[in-house]
Image (cartoon, rainbow, N blue to C red):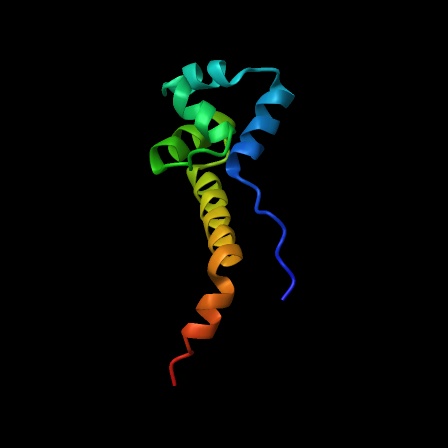
Length: 96
């Protein structure tokens, strides 16, 4: 099976958004009311987006929190598919 392309971490989407708006990660953390370290880790794909962060991002970017949670869920599923998909397909059979 052909390997899937690397999934896009939600932090890359946020990074593009803040660059387009000319603001820093630190400024975004202040606007969201969260620690700068949290945003830094998200921007560098070292941390996922929590429900709390999704609510804040949804409000700030006027996208709704579901947008950010869906990005995170898609990323997580794609990562597991890339790592374990073949094994899961071999071991887990469809219920009869």
